[in-house]
Image (cartoon, rainbow, N blue to C red; front, side, top):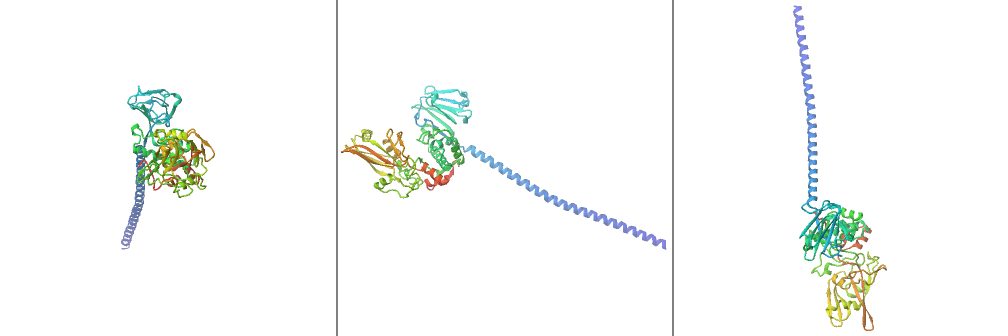
Length: 475
C-alpha cells in the first residue's frame, strides 16, 4: 500500500513538472510573439514614415525640375529680338551704296554657306547684293565690324546678326539681336555711366519700354526694322557697353512701364527748365494720362500767362532739382537777317517780330508766329520750331557759364524771344530759354538728382510718369 502511494506521488510530481514546463514554454512563445508584434509595429511605422518622406521628396524634386524646365522654356521662347536700322547714329542716313562686314567669327548665310572666315572682310554693293542678304555670325556674341562706307576706318563692332536689303534708295543694313544685349549699348549712349545706379536703372527701364512700344507699333517696318540707331529712336552703339550700365540692365531685366496693360511711350530727355511738358508739344489731340506736366522739384504751379512765363524762364528757382545744371537756363542771339533768310520762301519780307502764341503744359512753344513787313507765318510743333531756330555756329550761353556752338536744334522749345533794335531796324533776336530736349517724360538730370536723394528707380519712374505699373515685357 505504501509502495503504491509512493508511485502515485511520483506520477503526480512528474505531471506537475511537465505542466510547469509546458506553461513556461507557452509563456515564452507568447512573450516572443508579443515582442515580434511590437517590433513589427515599430518597423511598419518606420517604413511608412520613410516611405512618406521619400514620396514627398520625390514630389518636391519633380516640381523643382518641372519649374526649372518651364522657366527655361519661358526664357527661351519669350526672348525678345529687336531689329535696328544702322545709320551710324544718323551720319550716313538710312540707305548706303557700299558696306563691308568683318567678323570675329565665321560669317554665314542663313542656309549655312560660308561668306567669310574670321577677320576676312566681306564687301556688299548695290550691284552685287541680292534682294535680301542674311549674314549670320557663327557666334553672335563674338562681334562683327560693320562699315557703312566700306572703308575700314568707318568700322563699328556690333553683336548679333545682319540682314542687308535692296531698296530704291540703296542698301538698308539691319542689325538683329536680343533686346537685353541691345540695351547694353543704348543705356550708356543715352545716359552717362557715372550717374547714380538707380538713375541708370530708371533709364534702362525707359529704354526697354520705348523699344517694346516701337516693336509693337512697327514704326520702322518700311525699313524692315523696329528702330534706328539715332536720336530718331534712341542712340545705339554710340559708346561701348559699360560695367555700370550693364548692371543696370541686368538688375531690371525684362522690366517695362505699362499703363492699362500696354507699354507706354516712355519719353525721356536731358534737362528740364523746372517743369516737364506733355506730349501736346507734338500736336497730339489729347495728352496721354501718364504724361502729365510735373515740377522737377521747385514750384508746383505753372506760369499761366505769357508775362508770368517770361518771369519764370529768365529767373532761377533755387528749389528746383536742376538749378545748378548747365542747360537749366540758356540764351542765344540770332541775327535778324538769318531768321528772315530762313523764312524767305514764305515771302513775308523782313522779320520784325516773333511771338509764341500757344504753349503746352510745361511752357514749351507749340505755335510760333513770325511777323514780317509783308505778312506773317505760323509754325507748329516743338521739333519744327527748334529746327527752324537752329543756333548752330552761334554761341549759346549756358547756366553754368560755359558756351556751346554745335547745337543743330535750339536747346528746347521753352523760351521767350526779345528783338534787339538799332533805331527802327530789328538787328537780332535773343532767345531766353531753359532745359535741353523736348521736355516730355523723364528728365535724366532730374532722375540723377532724385537718385542722389536716395530714391529707387521705381520711385523715380513714378515721379515722372503717372498712374503706371512696372511689368515684365516677356509676359
